[in-house]
Length: 261
Image (tube, rainbow, N blue to C red; front, side, top):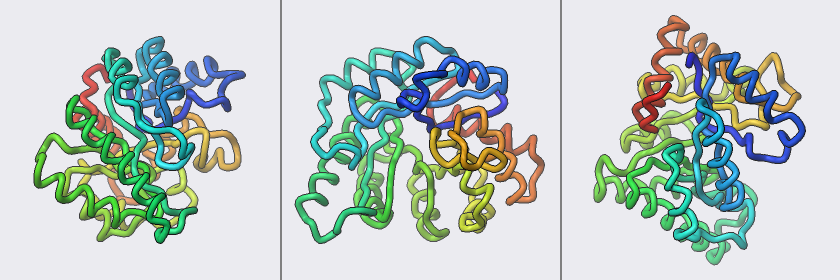
């Protein structure tokens, strides 16, 4: 594969009418993807999809706010780990974008849900896929002490990174990569972080069906468009495209232990 989209939602209803065509375009574009669950049902769909396609892998877990009634039932997720295609736990994390941080009940609910999934990932030696909105400092307050305790076993990626350089450096220091979406093709907000990042700490993603890159902006996104993200990372860094493309594939292999790329 030439490209890898580490975070897509091909398990979502937006693809129910033409999922196989989207997967075919992805294959023709020499692209792989990790399909991400947000609860048990969508995680199960991600695994089933991954098992049917050699260039698809799965991420299983519970999103912090998509459905506050859903908890993390570890015994169910253990069953999903029977599949060798499950390479990461999540997307889990904290999301205070629409929540008042003074709502201590909600804050504690999210932190408890996140910690359950961190310990699950540690138990089964998987990286974690982190979702964060308006919560980077709170995440780091949880992750930095755990990193000192668990060392190399605690690792993962900060999906759809939207923080500043100082926040990014703190994540890189604890072995968490940062991934970028099609937003970087039409916004300059993250150029400083992308330029400053050690190359081994960068990942490419689409978050499909959301935030399609230029020239597809306004349309439903899909994994085959991740090449535009890779191209833009090379452009922002002023580096050779082939070097960036190969380095991002190597990063996927290292973090998610995917040997088949």
